[in-house]
Each structure stands twice: as structure tokens, then as C-alpha cells.
Image 1: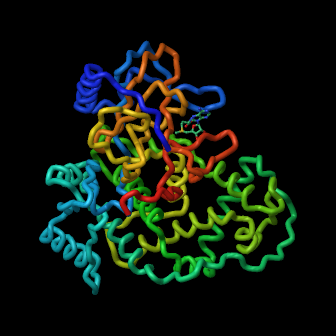
Image 2 (image 1 turned 180 degrees about the horizontal axis):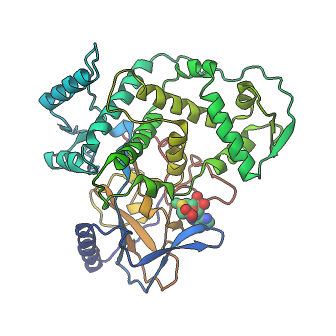
Image 3 (image 1 turned 45 degrees about the vertical axis):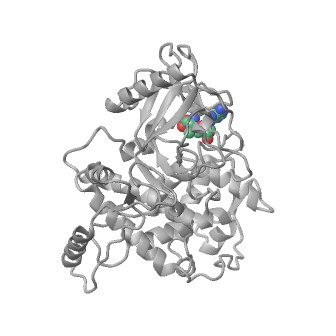
Length: 446
Ligand SMILES: C[S@@+](CC[C@H](N)C(=O)[O-])C[C@H]1O[C@@H](n2cnc3c(N)ncnc32)[C@H](O)[C@@H]1O
């Protein structure tokens, strides 16, 4: 991809830097943002519209993530808090130093009356400085980090356990001779959603499928996705338990307002994978799991396997605090992340030219992913009037030119193309950035 380059004049850049700092200092999120409102826009769903005339260089919105995670590939070299990237230098600071980690491990082992010592893994969470480490530890709800680190440790443990187990692709196409009594029209949202719900429940309880899925060795993209989902669910659990809500950070409820792409994703994948019955799903009430497996698109089966990996990791015996799991919860994040998360890109060393996608050029790395519930209402335009800039873990949205009152504020979804992006439905545009699970972008450096 070659991004459209446009150069910002020096004085103008200073203004942006100043305004940015002010906005970040004020923790300006769209909770308090008077410049944009969400409207329903023909053919696009919801979108941001300017509430008054906006001058070029104005910060329209600064967004803090609900959850952000470094991709599996770049965890050693990327700060888990500010996303500072230094290749080939490794990040030196762990969330817990050796003594703290030993104390935590002893506490968990004791509290859980575990015969084996519960080990704490921090490989996937490293920081560039003490400041970033303490920002992480003090962020969010009281002791949110404890549940977060416990969950990351469990995911890491399950990844290790499975590594090398799966030599072959699991076979998920058992014989099925069910005679359908009805055909569910693919355009029927309610019936198709019911079929999907029933299929997930049935497949995730099927012992044969589960035992096959246990051989499934999750790849780096699945691991990254699981960490992103875990971070969202950690927030949910802490939010529900907390007596002292921190209202300055996005909540899990904010996530639920994001467009859910499960149905549109299913339709596309179903049509693409079915040689026959492309417009309907054969169905019989009370049908066996084989009939669900027969009509479930292979790419969705992969997601089900990832969810079983996630649930197996979380159900390792005797560990508290523990994250609650259900396939509904997993899906509630997975299919919202899809098409709505922002890629966190390496910041160019010499930002002399600010480009679309903040100068994302081929030599820059995709370091991770973030879910910014307050920023998802920026629709796409090829001639975007807003540019997205990353400032540490926050995203700042700046007007590129004058935006009139009532005009839509759009960003360019940028880094799309290269055949790696799947459209989510026929009317659908590409994601803001492809989510971790569907991202196959290869690193430039490895
Ligand atoms: C990040 S969301 C943007 C908010 C979304 N419109 C909503 O209602 O939640 C991305 C989705 O918005 C829609 N979208 C974004 N830009 C669009 C455009 N220019 N034309 C039509 N639909 C668009 C597509 O459905 C896309 O998958």
C-alpha cells in the first residue's frame, strides 16, 4: 500500500501538537466532546457529524482504549503501556519484579490451596520504563491488573501446553444424514441469529469437537485476539465488582454499543463456503451437532476453536482470581472487535510528512490492536477530513481541513487492500484496521 502523502506546514504542526497536549491533559474523550455528535447517516449506519464549524488542526476527539494489546510477534520489543517500539532492543520492565512475582505466586498458591506452585507469566506484558509500569498498575479499577495478569498467565500456560500437539488440521466434518425440515433464509436476521446461537451452544458442548479442538494449537493472531478479549472481560468483571467506578475510562457497556458484526460475517463466510444452499440454511429442530458442523463455515469453526482454547485456558483448576467465561461473552467482544478495532502502528522516527494513517508506510510495523469505543463512529472516506494520530496508547483525531456544521467527520480506513481484508457484508466497507484474528500481515523485520 502506498499511503496518500500530504505535508503539514510547520506552524500548523505546532498548533496540532499544542492542541493535542491540551486535549490529552484534559482527558478529553467524547464523553465531554462538544464538537461531534453521533447521527444516523443514510447507507452508513451511525457516524460522527460536526456540531459547529471546525477549523483545520482542531482536535476533534482524543480516545483512550477500553483495551489495547501488543501483538504476539512484537511483545519483547513493544511497551505494553505506551506502545513505544524499539527494535531490536527488548523491553526491560515487567509489571511485577521477581520478588513481587514470587509473593503473588505464593499468595495465589495458598489462597487456591494448590498442590503445585502457581506460576506467573509476564512474557506478554513488558514495559519500556518504570513510569509505564506504574501507569499500567494504577490504571482502571482497583487491582484490575491482578485479574489481568492471572488471565494472561493462564493463556500463556495453555499456549505452551498445546504447542507441538497439533500436527494436523482437526477434522470437523463428521458424516451427517439429517433430513432438513425447513430452510432458513439467509436474509432472515432473527432466524439466522437463532441458528448461530444454537450452533455455538451445540458445538461447544460436543465432546468430539472439544477433544479435537484440544489439539488445536492457537497461532500468534489467536493469542493476540484472546489477550484483547481478556482485557475487555477483565474490565467488565472489575466494573461489576467495583464500588468505586472510574468514569474516566471506557467501560464494557461502551463496548456493547459498537456494531456487532457476527451476522454479517457469518453470511459472507456461509455464502463463500457453501457449494449448494447459498441462500438458506437447511435445518431440523433438535438436529445433531453433525448438522451444525456441516453448515458452519470453516472460518467460523476456527473462531469456535479459539473460543474453546480461551475457555480451556481459563478453566485450569484452582486459580483465583478467575475471569468468567461463556461463548456469548467471547463472541460479544470478538465480533465487535472485528471491523472496529484500530491497529496500533509504529510511529515514524521522522514524521516530516504526516500521511494518511499517520504515515503508515511499508517499513513500519503493526505493533498491536486497541478497542476505542468512543472513536468507532468515524466512517470511512477516500477523501477524509479527519486524520488519526497515535499518541502513546491514545488516538487523537485532528481536522485536516475546515469541516462545516452538520458535515460528516470521516477518517480513511487506510491500510486496506493487498487481498488480506475480507468485506463483512456486501454493503460493508473494510474494517478500520483488520483485527488480530484476521490479520495476516507479515512483519517487515521478521
Ligand atoms: C467502525 S464502524 C463505523 C460506525 C458504523 N457506521 C456504526 O454504525 O457503528 C465501520 C462500519 O461502518 C460502515 N461504514 C463506514 N464507512 C462507510 C461508508 N463510507 N459507506 C458505507 N458504510 C460505511 C460499514 O458498515 C463499516 O463496517
